[in-house]
Amino acid sequence: MSKKTGRAEMILREQGARVTPQRVAILMAVAATGDHPDADSVYRHVSREYPHISRDTVYRTLSMMEEKKIIGSVLFGGASKRYDPNTRKHHHLICLRCRRINDFSAKKFDRLEVPSSAMERFTAVRTTVHVEGICDECQDRNRA
Amino acid sequence: MSKKTGRAEMILREQGARVTPQRVAILMAVAATGDHPDADSVYRHVSREYPHISRDTVYRTLSMMEEKKIIGSVLFGGASKRYDPNTRKHHHLICLRCRRINDFSAKKFDRLEVPSSAMERFTAVRTTVHVEGICDECQDRNRA
DNA sequence: TACTATATAAGATTTATTCCTATATGATGT
DNA sequence: ACATCATATAGGAATAAATCTTATATAGTA
Ligand SMILES: [Mn+2]
Ligand SMILES: [Mn+2]
Ligand SMILES: [Zn+2]
Ligand SMILES: [Zn+2]
Image (cartoon, rainbow over all chains, first blue to last red):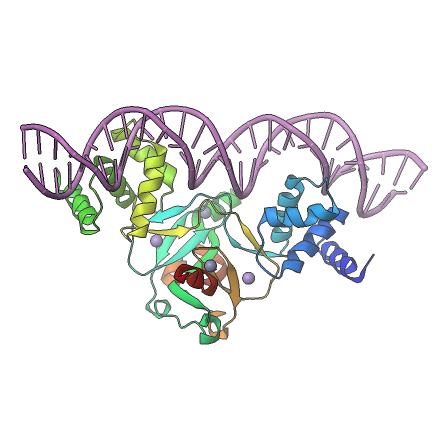
């Protein structure tokens, strides 16, 4: 057990998750990129060590780790693209459960100044605020 | 030609796009929802009037209208979900061309106050700033 | 060591999206 | 109105991401 696998094991145990070699490898693979990998890139990476690992294991494990907040995520996969008839500047409330999307407006969010150090190598086209959470209908449904 | 189809035609012509009955119906369908429909929901709506419309036409047309800024979009479809080893509070620069994602931090973005009127019926889990644009590599590649 | 709930492998399935190609049609000039 | 032709469409095949199914394996623990 190397120092790094030990650390991964610890994180898993802290969250009350079973420790399996596959999970350790997946967690280390995500951390190793230092980037924002998709599931298949994690699969390819882990496959070198575990040639028989199943894609399902990778998908299941990543999603479990996100639930337990061991890792995060940026984009919504598996979801369909959502179009918007409203072309004015506005921002969004996105329900993580039912995927309902609602607009909101806030003048103070319409000209957010991204730190210039971050923008040195990037040409912004649009800057918006995403509020992810749970909508009222989904909360009600949960109580019932 | 009803008042509404006339308006849709005008918008298409303004953008130098050919006016076809399918395009008019698609544009009206997106506007009619007043929501954030996905392509298949637009397809089903337009199918009532044009039972033989092809899914490809709907996808192609929506994407054309987004390019011409006749409509907008909220989420990335067709893309794979992207995980993130960084669990600290941070924000993202997302390249629309190569889908590279880079982190940036800005204290002033870490506690954005969403107007309470918007949040009356929503429980926020996370609020982040998404900067969409073109990364430096993609800009260089374009010039070449 | 034996038990049991949970995790995994392998492959099938589903869903969103894009590709292919033959046909149809909108815009333009006569 | 008519011919032309670049572009759009229909219909279906192909691709890619994610999930489901089921038989087997294994981590935690008594
Ligand atoms: Mn919107
Ligand atoms: Mn990040
Ligand atoms: Zn909801
Ligand atoms: Zn790029």
